[in-house]
Amino acid sequence: MEITLGESLDITQIQSIKEEIANKIGDEKQCTLDAGSVNRIDGAGLQLLLCLVRTQEELQWQNVSESLYSAAQTAGMVELLKLNR
Image (cartoon, rainbow, N blue to C red):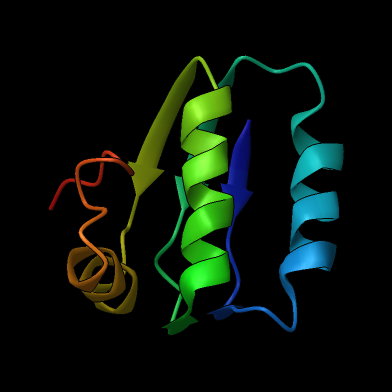
């Protein structure tokens, strides 16, 4: 299952993004997140991504944007999110 994240992952959109992702994933055990379009992310967005990392048996990142990586680095979450550059 591949999920393409939008430009913004912030508190104003987290609930709808969470529901959209939950509907797409369903019972899938493997997931690929394409994060190349993410330009804006806040703490709520990072928390949502961390929840995905922890609940999916196999999660892979594709096209991690500089904005996402920088926000994760600032929050000390690069390793928790299993981001690689």
